[in-house]
Length: 98
Image 1 (cartoon, helix red, strand yellow):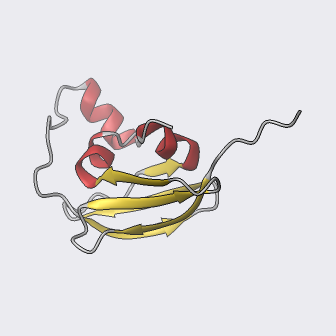
Image 2 (cartoon, rainbow, N blue to C red):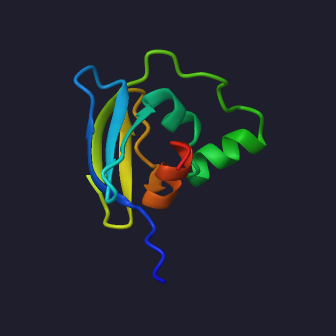
């Protein structure tokens, strides 16, 4: 028996740039709000800001301005200028509850 683990097959930002729309290899359609993604960033800068108590509790109105595909994950740039976060595809699926 072979276990098939879904991964990200395709992605795009929604027309209003407020959501990352993801389609998996099992044809599931998932939506991840930009604010949830920004709050979930695990880059060194954001990790340090959390540790120091300087990380915001919310990012109202945040938008996705660019998405770079790195193969194993996506580099997402946001309207607040943050572009350091790399979201491994498995992490994106976990954020979407998959």
